[in-house]
Length: 82
Image 1 (cartoon, rainbow, N blue to C red):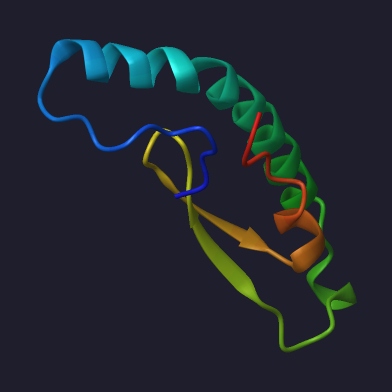
Image 2 (image 1 turned 45 degrees about the vertical axis):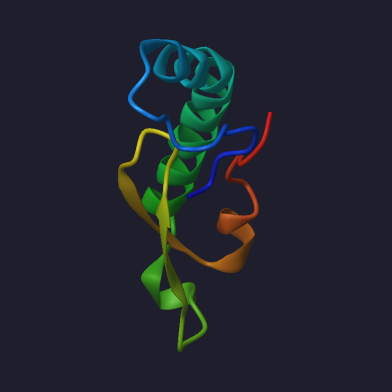
């Protein structure tokens, strides 16, 4: 999971869940911006210009959703810590 500053798994207590949400809120916003950038860049990739074989990375975002990222350069653009 690509999130920095994530506290240990909540033990079912409301406070732990709220603390985790508060800690991750700014990080999620930053990651959302980087995800938008990466998606735009991937849409503009010319398949004919790629050097094959290519690597496709599967990552899990802060909100738990999966995302595929094509190429090392774009993977480096993903915000993983605030």
